[in-house]
Length: 224
Image (tube, rainbow, N blue to C red; front, side):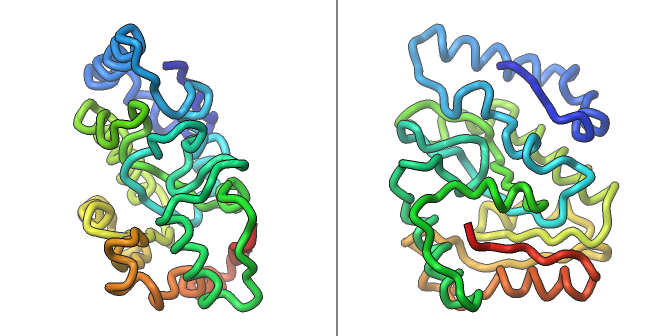
């Protein structure tokens, strides 16, 4: 695992890379590859969310669980897939909600959410790697320690960040966030299993922009 963390993130997280759990995680990833397992995303993309959204530019955090485990899908951003890959069902539902939530939104021909990331939307998965075809295969190996520390660091060191928590898994992270100085938007997950139980119609994107506008910050252009 090559660690190429963007400089503003490295300044606040550098101590994490010296901790035992991170050393064990690195060894785990090496061992998985030695076993012949294909690990997603590719090494250069593992920390893509941090590269595209520097710490000093974070305005919104969208928390996912696992990288996609299909070929050429994951590229280090939660819910996002690389161009040329079919949009997974959850992402299709995110776009369906955007069509009804944001005036003029046109369903895009791809699912690469990099343009969101470049506007300050940190697309953070709880686990940053996965084995091909094996969802959840890298859970409880150390990534959660790291990404929990990311959430706590944002909560502690920044103010008026908007955290979008879709589904029970993401909402378990709420305890890491100081709700007295941040904004939390919650709804069911956009998965087909739960989208119709409250995700559709929850308007997270317009709510986010209303908060940003009230803070006199630039709103997110959700069109990709």
